[in-house]
Image 1 (cartoon, rainbow, N blue to C red):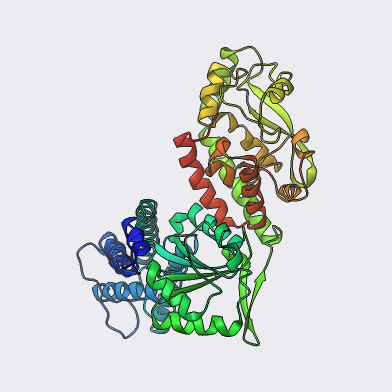
Image 2 (tube, rainbow, N blue to C red; image 1 turned 90 degrees about the vertical axis):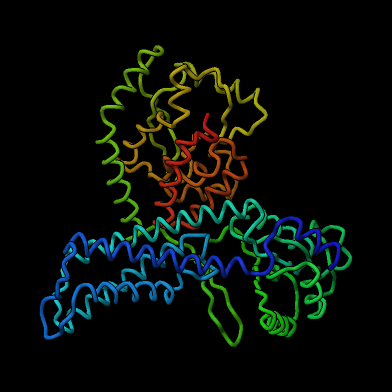
Length: 487
């Protein structure tokens, strides 16, 4: 074994894909346990310990038999539905989507079978088994994903990746994979296409001007179980085809990383044309039914939260008035969708003359005027520091959500002086309504750099989906409770 391979093993990175097979087996048992609990629970809640026969038709079928058949069929359907596919296991929303869709299809099939054979399946039995099963499956998947992510942050359960490409492309892909190590890919070495720029590569370089034999030797030396071909590698199609055959024979995964960044999975569609895998990139348009669904979510959730928190919000308003002179609320003009201005409302957390002191603080600060925030801001009142820490000061923005000037999820609402500093790319943030929360809120809040904040907002605009909004809302609750990056 070479020195490099030995050093790689000392890092604690998983060899091969043994962990992946173990993970898949574990998920099978966990899925089975969830399904058994859901179906058994539905049977006990509806019929108790009595073994009842399904009513209707000429078929004699007890609910005990139906439960066993349903357990087997549900567990098998989760396998056939690709819910344990290595490409979706542990990252993204596709895993959760497949679990829910597969379960709905299965119970749809149960309804069809019941109709064909004239079986009057008890509605109480089905209405308990389906939601209980989906909730259990999703909850266990979420918990298992958290465990998997922690192990990956500790350097375990990772795919060892050999990168092939030009040094700049190798460095870019390596940086991105390391930034999101919970996805399970750990760059360990590289084979570069430009031998004159080897010294510019951050990873250990095991060869240049790649051939199939060189790549196979590099795999053996680095212990990689996955090969990633970077975009712009300028490799011959015949070489890639032969490399694919050789890797397949050795059970080594192959990834082709196109030169695309900040593009979510649902926007990418592959279409084979004349033997060429053409990648179509679509831009989601927030219109029609999608816009209606987002607006409906905004109205329903904001109305519920306002009803639940009405009394606490009145108490907070009174405390703000008592804590310092001035109004309980702070109104400020912000720029919304399409560059239209609106009045955003918050609980006042600063002294009354805070706005007049702003320019002086910006001049003293080394930060950009865009997204200007400062720790230990002397303008913040005693109560203001506490309500800002838990984002309580933002609760009145629910009224902005109700009147349609804001959304629950979206880019940060900016003031006019900040929008005037936008470059061409940043203007795209104005294509959707600003939000009470967003990717910036759940990814570090005020601790993010200017570039990262803008990148996250642009990613949201370019890759909007209702499922992503719901995920962000759940993650926001955790971010607020954790108080990370809040000041």
